[in-house]
Every structure is written in structure tokens, then in C-alpha cells.
Image (cartoon, rainbow, N blue to C red):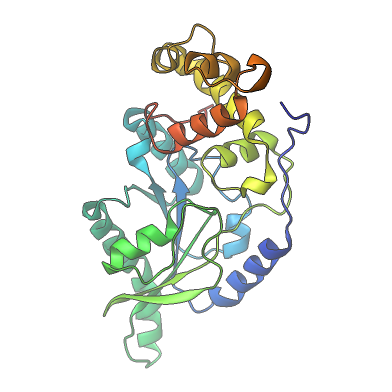
Length: 280
């Protein structure tokens, strides 16, 4: 494996995204923060409350179809206690959960709209801003809400580059934003988990190091399940490569190919449904 296991990225475009976000905040009534249900804590932007300046916030735990649903209930309760925000569990692949998102956003926006009407202004559509780490599914959520593909999405971190307003219905407009990630990477454990779920550019980490760390973390709670899935006695890249007869020159196991394979297995939910963060 490569020696450099530190996950690093360059903060220039992140700082720009933060500045743009702050500029648009005054136009919005509600903020929708999208988190990845597999890493509910690690996909939270630590500075979010300061960044948003007290705006009403709705938290969505997205990609719940890839997470352990029973364990996720405990995280929902914990996040509610920590933030005093409404927390909804959704799967952007299915539209049935998204109607409640619209209903809750309109409810949170109503006090602001009523205050404006009391000043003599005409009623307008509620305005919500969608924020979150790259690749947590913000654009997929918006596309399901609009029943279209107006917002550019992709499987890579950071596909959404520009802010754009999207009309949901006559009562609600959404502002999609580029994903924001921390300016600094002091918390390498959280940074590694962001790499697991593809929220960090592939240029920022080594696949082999990250894939082995994913096996290490998963094996703490799901060791038997993983060993059965990969048909090995010990969860290492070398053993998994050998079990699939992926051999390169000099009869060495192809750990590069194996690392990519393991990360894809996890991201696609093929190994199982997991939550990688821990409750205190």
C-alpha cells in the first residue's frame, strides 16, 4: 500500500462555495441540510449553525436504503436532541418520502412569509436552500421533488458547480448549491468516512488505504457478514484478491483492483446495509 494515508483536498472552491452560500442566505426562508444516512455525523458540516446564522433548518438523512434502518432510528433521535431540528429519513430513489419534505419546508417557512405579509407585502412562494457535503444526494432529492432532471447530478463528488433556483410548485422554490466540505481536514476519521461514500474527490486519497480501512471499520460490527460475503478467513485486500484469483506479475495479488472493487461493493450496497458512525 502507499505510505501516504492522509486524506487532503484543496480548499479554494470550498471557500468560494461558502461565500456564495452566505450571499444567498438572505433570500431564503428555510435551509434543507442533506446528510448521508450511512455516516450521519461524519457528513455533517461542523460549522453549519454558524454558517446559516440561525435560519430554520430541516435535516434529511438521505440514502437510507443503504443504511441499517433499525440503527438509523437511534441516530435520528440523537440528531434531534443535538440540533432541535426536524429530521426526516428519506430515500431519493423513491418519491413517497419526499411529499413530507415539501410539507415540512412550507411549515417552517410560514412564519417568515406571514411576517412579510404583515408588513403589507404580497404572499410569495417559500424559498429553501439545499446544502450538504458533495455526493450526499442533494441534486437527486431536488430532481425527485421536481419530477425532472433540471439539476445536474453525478456519481462523483462535486458535480454541482453553480447555484440554481428550481421551481418545485407554486408554493415552493429551491436553491441548489455546490457541496461544501470542511476547509481543513483535522478529523481524519471523518475524512476517511467521506471517502468511503465518495464525498471526497478520488484525487484526495489512496484507494488501497481507504478500502482496507473500510474493511477494518466494518469488521468491528459486521465481521462474520463480511467474511461470508468475501469468502475469506481474514479481511485483507490480499486475501480477497487471492480468493477471486486476481493475480498480477510475480504471482502477487492485485490489490489495486480489489480496493476499487470493495469500495464499489460498499457504495452500491452489495455487502449489506451499514452505518459507519458510532453513537456515544
